[in-house]
Amino acid sequence: MSSNAAFISGCAGFELTDEEVAFFRDARPWGFILFKRNIQNRPQVSALTAQLRDAVGRPDAPVLIDQEGGRVQRMGPPEWPAYPSGRTFGQLAERDSAAGLRAAWLGARLIAADLAEVGIDVDCLPVLDVPVEGAHDVIGNRAYGREPTIVAALGRAAAEGLMAGGVLPVAKHIPGHGRAGVDSHLSLPVVDVPRAALEATDFPPFAALAGLPLGMTAHVVYRAIDPDRPGTLSPVVVEEIIRGRIGFTGCLMTDDISMQALAGSLGDRSRAALDAGVDLVLHCSGRLDEMKQVAAACRPLEGAAALRAQAALDARRRPEPIDLAAARDELADLMAAAVV
Image 1 (tube, rainbow, N blue to C red):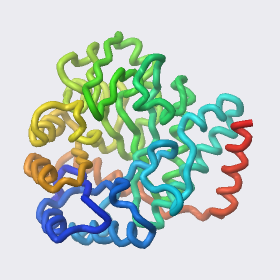
Image 2 (tube, rainbow, N blue to C red):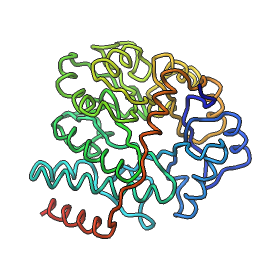
Image 3 (cartoon, rainbow, N blue to C red):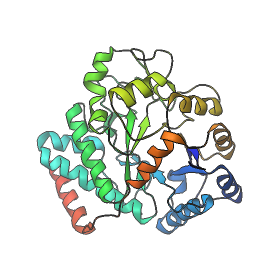
Image 4 (cartoon, one colour):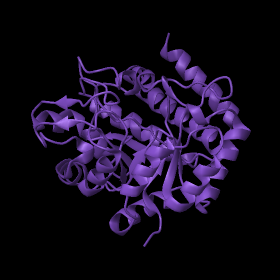
């Protein structure tokens, strides 16, 4: 059904090297992801996104970024505005629900305008994790709050703001990273609570947004579900929880496959994730030697996974009209009220 491979790749710098162009032409990743190392200014990012798409011969190839606001913002001042953290929207919503929802929508709509201008059409937002007391700060104020209903409502507002701006949202980190006691970039979190606790707190925001076009797994072991494998590599978590209990219908990607939470070679990790039922392997480092290992392990994107990936791309739409200056002023007013 598809000649694309089931992975998403980073790249090393501000423009592609000849080696990268040749690699992407042959490996045909489904999409790409950018980081701060790839971001200089508007003309450069626009040229890079065009170069990436040209390398795979697909003008519709998705280009992703983590542009949450707060401390996770790959495009920032002075070239682009800084945006509030998720928790800031949550604090406003706790005082004034309508104001918080409007602010979350506006923030995402404005981020979408920044991204679409330079050819980025997928944002790894909203963060639907629900942190608990004592958890590691890797999620922290990236989350909207500790109340699942608030997290779900603000996550929906952000997703709708992105979509209105022509950018696809990504629900992360399914089925929940909020209880992790360590940073999964550095080591493997193990969550040891009864399944009932996960179903009461962690799963509901994802279930509420189960129809989003794209989602990202969590590199977390949930002992009550699969004591031996992190969610990303667990057929039980992917099929029984993410697809079953939560009901997520979109295209599912891993969190960065090179994070130190996962053991084994990059090839072994990639194969295990795909075997578990994940649709796409996300690899972020931009190191060509690593990219080659991932590409060698990733099968063609086909069957149900290809259908879900295409459905995600088909969910993209033209940005709706907006007065950007007025929207920025409105967001600034709402956020000023939030800190009074």
